[in-house]
Amino acid sequence: GVTRLSLGVQSFDDEILRTLGRPYAAADALRFCRSARQAGYDSLAVDLMIGVPGETQDSSRRTLQDLLDIGPDHVSLYFIENVEGLPFAEVLARRPVDEDAAVDGYERMRAGLEAAGLHQYEISNFARTGKECLHNLKYWRYEPFLGLGPSACSHAGGRRWCNTPSLEGWAEAVRRSGSAREEVVELTPAVAAREALVFGLRLVRGVDVAELEARTGVNVCSLYAREIDELASDGLLVQAGARLWIPADKLLVSNAILSRFI
Image (cartoon, rainbow, N blue to C red; front, side, top):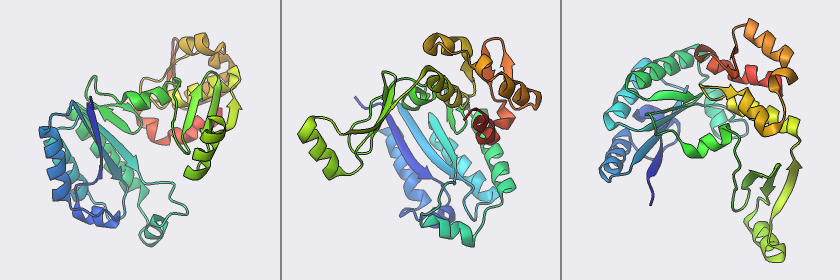
């Protein structure tokens, strides 16, 4: 019954893999991907990292070529970030990344993926038509989901909650009361509309504000009229009819855009 296999390859360049501390070579990753494709999975997804110390145009080109030779159905392309407190922070401190070069690498990779029929549908995600990740789309569309087990979070029925993080604490709470929920948050219509707007603007197609109002009872164009007008006048947001979206060439500054609604 399993139809999708998602592989965290990160790179098809040996030097980049060594920098990331990965215990395999590019040839191993290629062999595994090809074996997965031959095994007959309906969808093969590959995750890549960009902006890694030591990355060059040649290493990016090699990774893109090997990736396209495999013929994946879905690709996630992530910048390295938020490593504070992690061992990799020491690597970045010793070998800082040129952000402009990293952005150039991202743009080359995006153009190559688009040309190969893997269309961008979210800031970091590309897919062949009909192969978009339904799991992640639930989050970006702000649909209900249940998380099971320690630390898992859920969003349903106008509430959001997380489970006890430790395995022992989770097991004891389930034995004692049948539930390990903690940090339950009641979501008001305004909060739900704001969160749905922020998540939805990650999608290339953006947000249907009429549909969002039907779900939450809140018109975000009225609630955030000033923010939307200012962003639109700066070319950071487009409003057409009932739809709002971030222009494709501004997706990499989406955090600054989305922060205006938080």
